[in-house]
Length: 596
Image: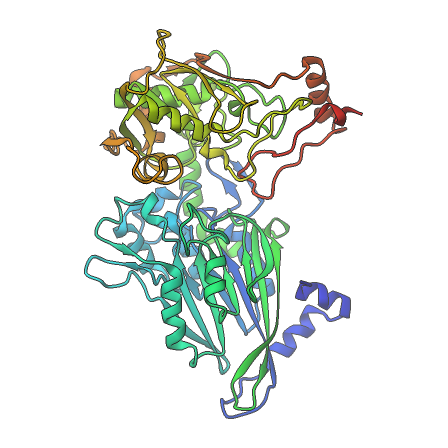
């Protein structure tokens, strides 16, 4: 689909000329002038606390995207016939939890200053409880839509739809969130009801379809279903509700400039403000005075190409100062080296292919506070690292990005093996001649766990489901299926994979049992426990320690040829491309044939 901007360039039409054509005086509903209209929608989502071009977790400038840069793009592109819409995951991430108690959150302050028309809260808005999400909703000047979340008394969290006007064009907007919030924030949603977005949209469309000229869906859902839940992806929605002219998808953190699904134009944006969708609906007036959509176009705007809007930066300066000051508060010292070795291959993080002190440290802390026999943790950032020297608060965020809490479960040996096999499916099966390790392109890096409290090998020459070898307790005793023990995991892993019949356990199978949730919640989540452990248990000084309790086996490549491949990758004479989803690791391999 050719973008409108590309078409204008090819036709020699300037943006100024286009603005003139769309800024004509409004006509009455009875008038037949003008006959055409260019309705523009500027859409964002998944900004995750990135209000300024600064990564507070890493404590460094990051101009790959931010709301302040998006504001500059919106100023440049906006016309009188523009709607500005955001599809959620706004207040979580990039240290924005610092501002949850403020009268107005910086992300909301920024959106209000920009002048957003619509906001649909995302799944991460539910992380902090229903009081917080309702407080943030009340701060918004934009209309808030969420039509599939109901309070215990049956009242909806927000309206399911609204009808706005540009000139006399009637624009219906419907907003929903993925129903899988009940997996991730079940405790926060106790007593609340979350319904299926497809069913809710169908009801709304049947109610308002004769009252609108244009119909737009604003959905905090990816294109495809998650966990096999019908209606949790907008593909199901477009197939069930082809009346939509446009669906603004979100949640998947991937760039979709524009694709048609069952005749519906679907777009999606990258996370952290990296892209913004510029959508244009060319409308023609009908003989009865209404409007119809004659054509549609869309493109992704790369926000790195824009400087931050100085007015918005000035407005957000007090928040920026607080976040930067908080990030560098010293909490301890790391002596004896870094927590993880440098990556052998640039885009394959070392903790994904070998035991490291980085994940061992997180498991050590989880074992300490739960008293469990086994612990499991994942990398929460593909660039996670703690370097020798002073440990600042921001350094903890770099190794544990998410605001997870700590759970304690009861599990047996058979369940542990099933869990470990599920995790080990992260790797693609090694084939003779492969010189690098490849990864399942559909498995995101944070779905792979490293385990502590047991010894084991992962044989990647075997097919998924048959990879865990030599599973023993630290004293060498094999882990029996009937062994019963406690395991420490984060709340996401517990509620998404381990306590429900979904990815790991089938319906009817015995599953682990919850012993304790939010362990030491008085201290905070896992990230806060890491800091408390350094300061209180270790007296402010820690050293990297690797117990080498696990390793990959089965990748029986020629060591000399593997090293040759590594050197060629470092020199740039070979490349190992990434995947479309930046949260996955390379699914292709360097082979002996690649060496030439």
